[in-house]
Length: 580
Image 1 (tube, rainbow, N blue to C red):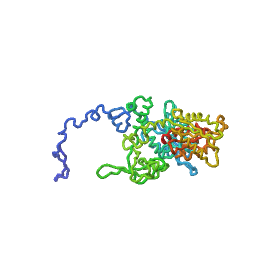
Image 2 (image 1 turned 180 degrees about the vertical axis):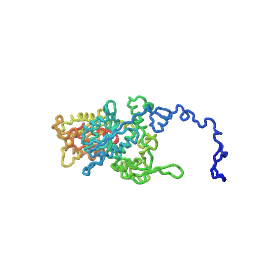
Image 3 (image 1 turned 45 degrees about the vertical axis):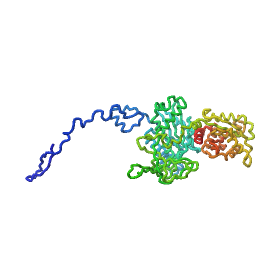
Image 4 (image 1 turned 90 degrees about the vertical axis):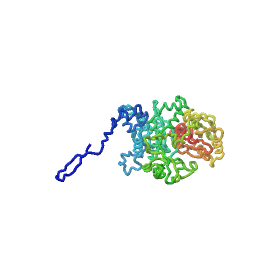
């Protein structure tokens, strides 16, 4: 080995070069044969597993498969769930056309929900989102139902969708018609109709079945922050479960293979839910006081900052800062949020405090993924959500599965003669409307005569009605229907009249024994009854919880009874389980 060396000869101006022996020894002199050659199969040992069934494919997996010579064009993968996003409301203008809004178009706003949710769902990577546009309240129940049925189930030219996410039209206003669209127009079943959370209280979950196939419907609130938070907490884990699927063989090993058995199926569902991936979470201390909501637990938008415990330990703590005003219309509260801090309900019915103090720590559900996939080992059974359900309490299951109904029938003095006829008839109508004997049973029924309304409140009647409701005859009921019988001949609808004055007397008598009023459910009852018979709108419905027992009480007329119960049926089962 030699090197080249430049030098100038003093006798000449010409640059010359000479070869000088090198003192550096070549490493090749010490190299053994095959030193720099990789042997065939040395990167991946024979029978190594590089990609497992059910694993979500990432870029590195594609490189591995290509390196091993696996044909990527025939790789078998699961189809992403197809999810449609729909906005509802007369006030909405497509966000892509909002520049066309005129200054005189009062009451119109750009639709922020669809761009938000479509982007949010697309970022999850576990679904294929589709924009379904906007439907207005004026389109009507039949027209909207027809359109959505075609979208859900598809036709010869379109494939249909698996999950529908609709925003708006699900609360308690006169124009909120979407629950009626899904239930009455499309044959859906409401599984829950109210959530004990802020934001997102009106959220409703519905399934629609047809020809041994099932579609899922998430009806979310119309405010964009509520829609986004509920999509994150409810829709995202559901889509993850749909996309990943479940291992039937593993479930069978854990619970037994006989899924026809009701108890085995219950254990199987429990296993699936408890092992479902949910959001990763961290515990963070808040950097300032936060006022607690007195009515519901709150998912508070926060930014996170990771700080070392000290300079040498290499350990960190998280600090959380509120993103500001949390009103569900303020999209800006989501802008810099890293996650949702789960704050407890405040006040005497909650944690006992009205303020979360600076320095106190609470769990934060992360928006972004700390590692490769949602959950990445965080299961529902290990999360802060776990206390929501108590699978070990069979009594809770029984109450959720079946309503125990007590019936109090209130008759005016003039209709006293009906007291021997009405109980069985009304009991059958109530059970039938609640889904049959598998869903509800009449524990007992009693009849109460309402005296003619006087100028002053009738304390004797109030005491008598309270005694009946709290007495042994109604004991064991988790729902009590107080039905005020209509006036006139029940066999001739033309002569029937809502007992308006009698209803007022009954509601007045119930006031002292009702603890909390459920005004939203009462409105559902009234709207449902009036859709069956318009005259039922005259009746003042009341829904609430009793002070001295964990029962739900509902006052209604026997006119429009079936539709009244149908309108609140989904919410009723949920409300009873929460109240119990």
